[in-house]
Image (tube, rainbow, N blue to C red; front, top):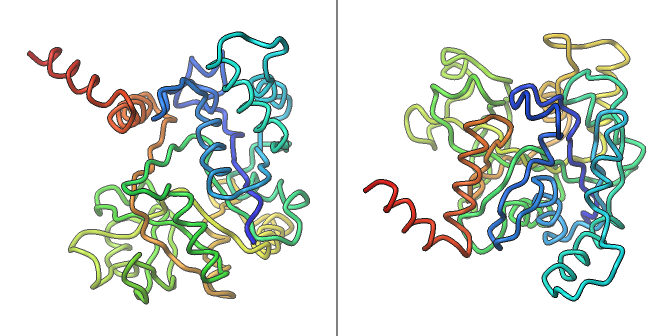
Length: 304
């Protein structure tokens, strides 16, 4: 059973500088679909708990634990405002489920994940990005879709999305034969980090996708604990790419040793870690929120 989730939030946030001088980017506020203003990390954590996760570890920069923990403090005094009381209870529930794990030095995404190995132990775990918001196109959240597939197959699951070839330089890209139609599931064979178009055409193209489209990582993963063995070997032997311990390279090794499934998710993964991405994330949340009709009217008024 999948009960643990790791959320990485140890990046320096240089793409959102200078705002990140004042606040970690994962704590940037967003108005969620329920109309409540929350830090990004809280929206992600709430979705994880709704999907059945019981414990969450957040990987942070050394010394940043207090900044995150401070947010998840409930109100000390009983409030007469029922809305404040309700949100205080939400924070208290989250606080009891969260552990903070420092990444001693910035050595890459794979290294950040490896820092959680002792906390995870011998269990499979969900991995989420602390600066990505996941918005489902259906009734099941994106995280729940991935958890459902893991519960069915009990294998490492990498959520994927269709991506045009001109954007492949931004993502890890995968390929493999489709073995299930609804939802579309792929038995992964090849994984390459940020390939150029020629490399993708040679090694990653699929007859089951439209011309010029590929499968790239969506930003939600379920890993068997054996991923730590692979990452540990990378660290022990100083196997790096561009000076960092890369998770994508470890995923490629894992696929060679064990089977892994690519799950085409019904929804969007939005990166709020850039100024444009932050605006897009908030706008998309707004259009899927309880304020959607009012937002649409306001946009029409602005455009007139």
